[in-house]
Length: 299
Image (cartoon, rainbow, N blue to C red; front, top):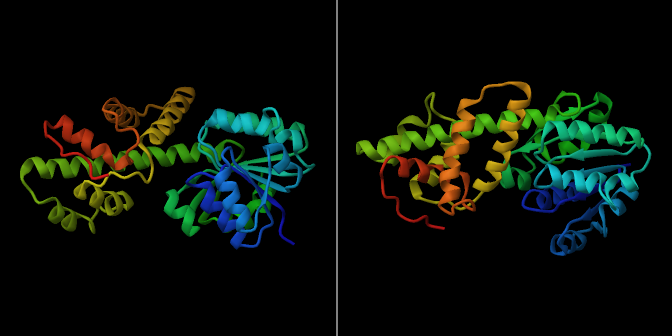
């Protein structure tokens, strides 16, 4: 019989993920700060809960999908939080992107209460969340990972146990470093083409299948060329992730000049009031540095 799952945080990522758990047959209890998504999931068959504590009281596995480290700490160990309602032996799976140090601290706090912790952040964005094709990187004990695997397989295509508590959060930050540097490379290539008088569409067709090809090239270059900066992943949220990256790099002494550079380039967008655009808007910042006069974004 499927374990009872609780889901807290029904935003752009959490809502489709919760729907996929329902579709996979898991008994599901949900909670969110705003009630609209709770009502939507309840209409699809989930049980609503009034607090994180109430979710934990009826769940064998509790999933959190929240914006930042303080949000996860408040939901897990704050008043009326998950820890206050935790069932003996329950597993809390945090799928947010947070500081590895916070993941380790929460793992220790739950162990004291007889519970278990997995940090399992995801990559793939809202599209991957809706299609259940997320990449999931998991930190925690092997036995807890094995217990959570059926849940993970209902949410994603690639599921990898990367180490002890905190390792999943660290892996996600490594993922973000690779993503933003790839994104920067795509933007710089297109701006160079623009400055040199090349047709950007022809450049894209010429290089997409060679060694410059990547997910970012395939998915974000066409948006840059079309000047479509509607958010899949917001600039402001990528900046949050980069702050976590740089804090973790400072903690362990890792030099990350590229990530620091992208953080500063995104600050150009924030200073221009473009923090709500998609991360492909890095193209606008590189255009600005190149002395080009970009037309306003389409959306």
